[in-house]
Image (cartoon, rainbow, N blue to C red; front, side):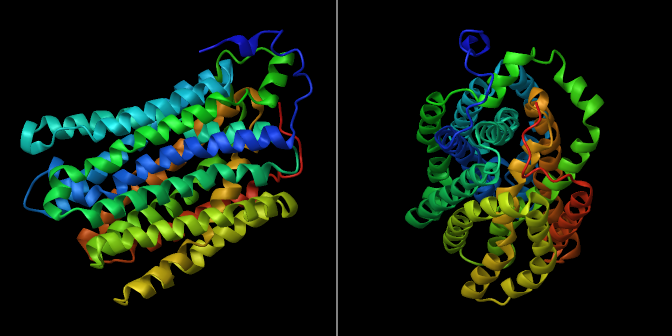
Length: 441
């Protein structure tokens, strides 16, 4: 991990940040590839949950096995704030680039390790213990991945175009989810149930290795952000960024937590949990559902640059309000249509219910980066976004599955999504508009 970035010689020309389009494009591409790896890895686990549940938590009750594997899914989110704070502190002290290389390597290794695990049939109780430990490692590194990517792009983009270039971070989110769905779809389509449960489930996890290698190459070839280099020309890195964030930026923390609560509920329920909803509860074919999710994810990715650019013109608050209002109005009616029994109607309804996602994903990340100054941006984003991810993503699949099991109310996920979106809308009322100003140092 080089310290060249902090030397006066390396920073001689950094007093005026070089925010040009070519720098921003390279940063956006490198960030999107790493984010794709993160969401591929988390997506694969979510999509394969119903398959791997009985392998690691065997029993006569399939719902209990599913709940157990979803609890392990949530455990990775619980450790994300720790990883975000530890690695975010490093990012605020030594630079963003080195930490982003570390996160993608750590996540790639952890995900591949899941594909190598023995199952409960071979090692008994040790199998779920190892699964939990690896998921905790995965969550630790994920806690600084998309956060660092969003900060990296914001600090590399010219004023007035941070929304457009920042949209490519969630493009990576959508592409990673689509890639996970395609991989799981091909795996389930080409293998028999016996092959799938014996060894085929490992394939999607092991394929994270080439994806992580590609991302490492992309990130190795980019420079440190112009904004961070300019900051180091003027000031020393903060010695205690966590203390500084909690002392001086509590209001912004709360607002971003509420916004990311709504954002994460929309993604993890709207796409990842809907796989469980459509297959386990509504009885649709697993492979067909994977193709539906992959197609929707690709469509969402294509929309994101438009919404990011629109937020540069109209402002972040107006565009985000459109997205969160969309969740409130659309999700419940569309879930009723999904239960009609027709796969085509279910696919169309899921597409309509997911339309707010590209709005919120594309505009959210640059907005969060703009709420905090450069000196503590990585740490502040790590704290707020990871807490929002726990509330909206880590525990929600378990909670809604548990509630459905007790109440048999299949609309529970929709109520949760709509409620989270309302919380985000309330936060928007107090959010300052940041689309047209310079990033704070």
